[in-house]
Image (cartoon, rainbow, N blue to C red; front, side, top):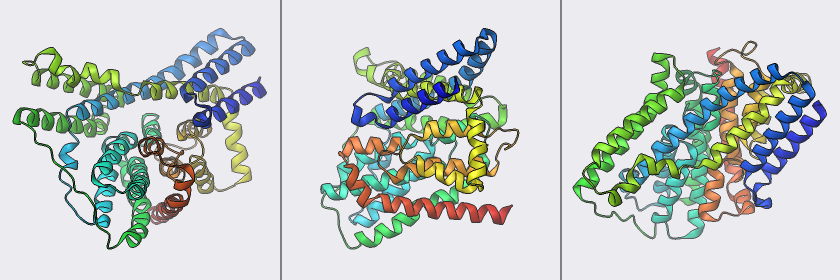
Length: 425
């Protein structure tokens, strides 16, 4: 049984990693893998009651992440439908390429912590396309945006899906992960920026941002939805800390509030003019394929956890590598090649909360490494894939121009975290 389970997981994992060459959505492979794994596990175990209990437990854990992501994605879609992000982008007026790079990178870093790295990358790459006419410069900016978005998402409980998984799973707490990873994540970004600033010095921007006029009623609804949406997203960690309820309930509660605000704002408009602004319409625009992928991969990893495959893997790594920091750094580099969601899900199953309690070194460092290691290759993160699609970035081009910057940032941030941890513990 174990041999079949491991073989199916490895094959489905490989298919997920080869999504683009195969031209088949990775969600399909994740769902097929989950179905086969649970089927084999159920047939070979022949204990219906036990399987039902374990599947129910896994489904509850998976549903919490899925509901949270659906709520957060919908809020971001509503803000975007109201052109809320123009409030940020229309204020960029610099004429120097280095100044623009610093502005975009810093905005991306902090915006990613509030939204998520995928959405922030889409917003900021679209902004760069409006500001920069030269394609080579735009490609380079897209690479910097990927690094900034992944670095910004790593230190926030809602900024990256892997950190969110660790937060919802109880491996990290919101305040501690911010305190522990803010400095390493900033280092991850600042080192590549300092190198890049030297190479771009003295260069100017060929075309300037254009601010479109907007009537007062649209401006009011835009500002209300932007600040309400961002406020709700930022308040979710506080909701969890005060009520001790799961984050998905906080995000759904906030979604209901935003839905009410939106309907009140647009209640006097006719159906055609307000249709694209409604929460109902935003629900139809969220990336459901990614949601389904998370369901499939988390249920697949659950089988490995229930069959103790992950525990055995953890024991083997501890015996061979010996050092936990090196193990986690290897996982981070591996996330540049394969999706970091199943890597983190597997790691959560490998190491128990009993042995490694909440806010343990291994969970904090895993959040950093898995969140930022994906920047090393363009295919290593959702942010990278988004930038690749928007700017048609070539894999080899990114490898030559950006991967080195991402790697030195990754190593520098890891060094800062390890130094910081040793000094404070």
